Amino acid sequence: MEVKGMREALGEEEVRALIARYGIPSPEGGVARSEEEAVAMARRVGYPVALKALTQGLRGCRRNGCLLLDIGSEDGVREGYRKVLEAAEVASTGAHSGGVLVQRMVPQGREVRVGFIRGEFGLAVTLGLSGLFTDVLGDTAYKTAPVSRDGVLEMVEGLKNGEILLEGGCDLEALAGVVDALSRLGLERPEILGLEIDPLFLYPEGALALRVRLTPAPGV
Image: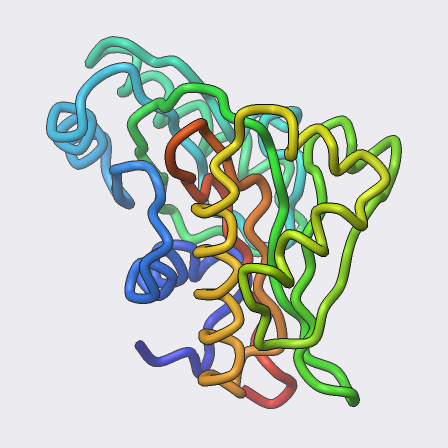
């Protein structure tokens, strides 16, 4: 996949395809660029679905009306498609692609954020709890890539509230697999400055990447 010229939010579809090549799963779905495409996509993946306007440089999509959840009908998809695009026009600090991500709703999992950032001392892999824990604690562990399974456990144990993952019935093998994949991706793709999955849903079995952001290296 060519990263050159990719922008952070506008390239979300491409970024999901990229992480899929490294074995990181995300909810079934795709990008629609018309109401008819959105309806067809919802039929294909199955109801209920989530709709998200693909915007550049905008966080808090649900708060800004650019993300709608639990849509269970064709009429709801049509109305929701228009609503998220209208919200994106108002709320976005940059351009938006005119596309809407349509995804099958998945069960709530334990929210984790994982990623990597490239710096002068190499590639640092990051791990922390997401959701409310991000806002309240800002708790993040770092390790230089590559990171082994034991290294992932050390990162979890190094979090102030790591016991939430250790004792919460979370699939730490799946988490280790995602971190390993991100390590390999970052080491193999120097044109990428950073990539973050927030949240990654962890389940008793498996994991799913819900939101993904990529930052290209300067000049890319």
